[in-house]
Image (tube, rainbow, N blue to C red; front, side, top):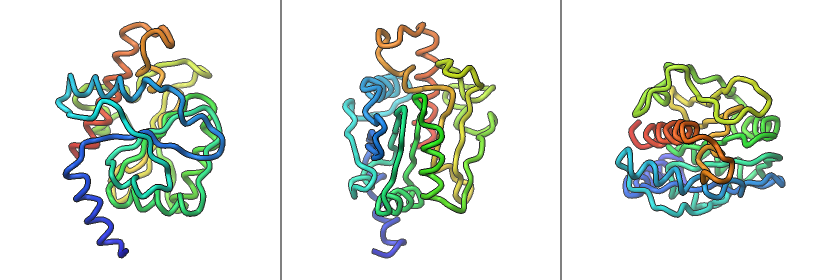
Length: 212
């Protein structure tokens, strides 16, 4: 299929679908971590920013043609991330065609996702996203950029991205752990204000996907 036809198909799919998915990747990393995260984020977005996302997000594999059905996929985990050659092509075409990928480091993913995404976009670097970027502006303002949810190594939280033609297609959140903040309250016993901060930042990401 020619690229232009693939892009038309992708945008047509997106125009009729407002659904997000959990991304299943290979390499042995626990892609299935934080099982309550996306359902809680979806509930928050539907109640607060007017989305109509399906409450139970499906799981989609990196190399699956079904990836095209979702404008946004989220991934998390603590360890290794490996993409096959076919998965690299599929993921690259997905993002070039309008799809958005978010990897959230649940602690221990950093070196692996950096290596994996470099294979997807060898000519692009992960760059830190400034606090002035729209993803931090609305509907909830984060004037200092990405919030700190869990301490991990005590480093400052950072959001990195890959931009293609000035469009953010890949988001990597580091030293933040948004997904833990989205989980059910009893999982990590985070204070209400911390969970709310994480959910609001997640809502900003969803808002950015569907309104830019």
